[in-house]
Image (cartoon, rainbow, N blue to C red; front, side, top):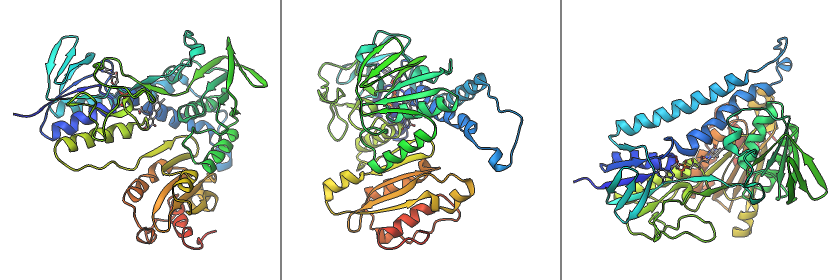
Length: 441
Ligand SMILES: Cc1cc2nc3c(=O)[nH]c(=O)nc-3n(C[C@H](O)[C@H](O)[C@H](O)COP(=O)(O)OP(=O)(O)OC[C@H]3O[C@@H](n4cnc5c(N)ncnc54)[C@H](O)[C@@H]3O)c2cc1C
């Protein structure tokens, strides 16, 4: 008889685990309390990227290209419909895939009763294995917890209004992407962060400096390296400054959704996430956890990767963890994999770095998108870090997940032929620069 697996949560962690388990011949049930697709499809990746796409046209310098029209206007209602239709298509696609793979779908809340038992609103379900993929929720800072007028990313993506002045607390990836959208829509956006640079704690410093310049070029006002002292009404008070706005948004991070876990499932006191071993097993036997609810970057592809790897492990297939990639979908995009320069210096001391500026790239010359760089970091022979700030960086970074994970020798990749003219030629140039002169610099 097929092994029974019960999955709690239908986000990119849970639904991918369900499909992979069904493909491996397991008897799969998935419970989702809200909408399939989770944060990613409903309140995260898909709505943000839809809005970043439609709003990107508002910033084009059409007259410079010889295109003119009387006046550019936009219809907020249609932007909203555009985003909603992307979300709807993605969610329906997930439901269709679950059905196609013969997965039992429960549209209800579930919690672990014991190893082998899950309870939902309509009954108790037995399973050989249980996977918790309950994801995460927005963190609201304590001093504005009781205010329902303060936005989170969930509210910002509803596009209910365009504040004249929007104050965003947190200049990490979500703060930066929402700031990009609203500045394109005409808001005067102010970004606040305790860190000295935008982009969060894990970004390469040289790339963070460039991100700072690109945010300033979008006329986003930065208030960095200062803790917020108080918030009064719609005024944020930081050291030496008081900034008033029409709307405040909190983007200080997300916390694991650990409600409904069994008491024997331990929580890591530092991360406040479910503790697992390297094979995703929690402290309760045959109960596993993946995605945002466990340690690691809170990213959709990480959650899905966890799920695929878990099912491989359960089915006796060796499955090592891949090298993570991450992207800021601002303009230009920033994509990274592996170590930053300072992490690499701390770990290896002597490293080689090569930087090729996008301004010398032939495709960038055609589009006039000249900002950015490709920065590669390697030990004597192995690539250990890649940071791409360029148009389409998100489409180029995947190769480095492979190279870095597999410790690929740079001699084996430097003869790669890049099509011309493409933004990816910057990668080829930066590879040359690891061992000698670049051709176009
Ligand atoms: C604004 C924003 C933009 C983002 N952009 C990106 C991006 O561009 N790229 C990227 O990789 N990541 C992005 N993310 C992060 C990404 O959305 C998450 O990392 C990802 O969704 C995590 O997947 P998950 O399956 O672990 O959890 P979730 O997607 O949070 O899914 C968990 C699901 O479990 C359900 N659930 C919870 N408890 C129960 C229960 N007891 N019973 C039944 N169901 C339950 C929830 O309703 C939810 O649907 C973004 C996030 C935000 C907020």
